[in-house]
Image: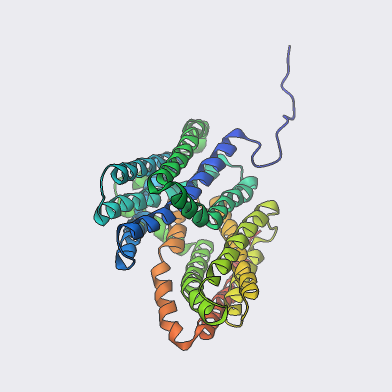
Amino acid sequence: MTTEPTARSRPRGPLGDPHLRRLVAGQGLAAVVDALFLVWLTLFVLDLSKPGIVTGFVLVAVALPRAALLLPAGVVVDRLGPVRVAVGAAWLRVAVLLALGAVSALTSPSVTTVALLAGLLGAADAAYFPAALAVLPAMVPTEKLSRVNALIQGAESGGDLVGPAVAAAAVAAVGFDATLGGIAALAVLAAVALSTLVRVVRRGERAGDDTGPDPVQGERLSSTRALRAGLGYAWHEPLVRGMLAAVALINIAVVGPVLVGGAVLADQRLGGTGSLGIVLSGFGAGALAGSLMAGWRPPARRGWTVVGGVAAIGAGVAGLGTVTHVAAATAVVSLVGLGSAFLGVVVVATLQERVPQHLLGRVLSLVVLATVALDPFSYVLAGVLLPYGTTTLFLVCGGAVLACAVLVATSPTIRSLR
C-alpha cells in the first residue's frame, strides 16, 4: 500500500507551478507584442504618408475604442470569467494582426484601413487588460500575488525598454511584412499559453461551487445596473477610491510632463533632443528594477509603501526641474520609473486580494482606465504649463504628486494596510 506524502515537494518560487509558468509566459508575451506593435504601427503609418496628423489619427484609432470600452469590458469579465475573456481577446489580437499582415502584403492599404484594423486591436486591448489582471486571483495563491504581478509587470517593463529598438531594427533589417509576421507569431504563442489555462480555471470554479450563489446573478438582466454597481463599490470603498484617485493623479501629472516636457528639457539643457532617448531608457530600467524589487521582497507595511512610492514619483518629477546633465536627468527619471512600477505591483496585488471576486473585473477596469485613458489630459496639462518654462512644469506637477502622497498618508484605511 502506498501513502500520500504529508508534505509534497513544491518549489517555493512562484514559477514552480507549470500553470503559473504558462500564465506568466502568456501575459509576458502579450505585453511584448503590445510594445513591438505600437512601434511597428507608427513606423508603418509614417511610411504610408508624410509625418503629421495622419500618424496621430491612427494612434487615436487604437486609443479611443480601448478607453471607451474598458468599463463595459469590466462587466463582461465579471460575467463570463476573466480567463475566457483574456483568451478570447488574445485570439482576437492574433486575427487582427494576421488580417493586417495580409492587407499589408497583398495590397497597398490606405491609412483608413490600417486605422480600422488598429481600432479592432484597441477593442481587444479593452477586454484583455482587466481580464488579464482579474485572472491572477483565480490561479495564484494570495501569498504569491505580489511576486507573479511583479514578474508580469517586469516583462512589460522589459518590453517597453527594448521593444522600440528591436522593432525598429527588425523593420530596417527584414521589412514591415516580416516584422509583423514575427509579432503575430509571438501573439499566437501568447494566446496558446493562455488557452491552456481555461480548463484549469474551470476545475477551480467547480471545486468552489459550494461557496454559495453567484453575487452577479442579480445583475445579469441589466448591464447598466452591473456597471453602476461596480462604480458604486469603487466610490464607497475608501481603499479602492483612494488608490484609484492616486493612480489617476499620478498618470495625469507624470506622463505628459515627462514625455512632452522631457523633450523640451533635452533640447534646452541636455545637449539636444537625441538625449531624450537616453533619459527615457532610464525610466524603463527603473520600472524593471521596481517590478523586480516588489516581487522579490513584498512589503510588510503596504500602506506606508504606497505613500513612499507616490512620494518618490513626486520627488523625481520635481527634481527634473533642476537637472542640467543627461546623467542626472536619467537618474531622476529612473527614480520615477522605479516608484511607478513598485507602486503598480502593490496597488494591483492589494486590489486583487481585497475586492470581491464578482466585482473584480469592473474595479480593475477602472484601474486600467486611470492608467491608460487619461494621457490626453496629461498632454494638455503639459501644454498649458510649458510656456512658463520646464522648471515650473516639473515643480508644479511634482508638487501635486507630493501633495497626493500627503493625502494618502492621512487616510487611515490606506495607512494601516499590511
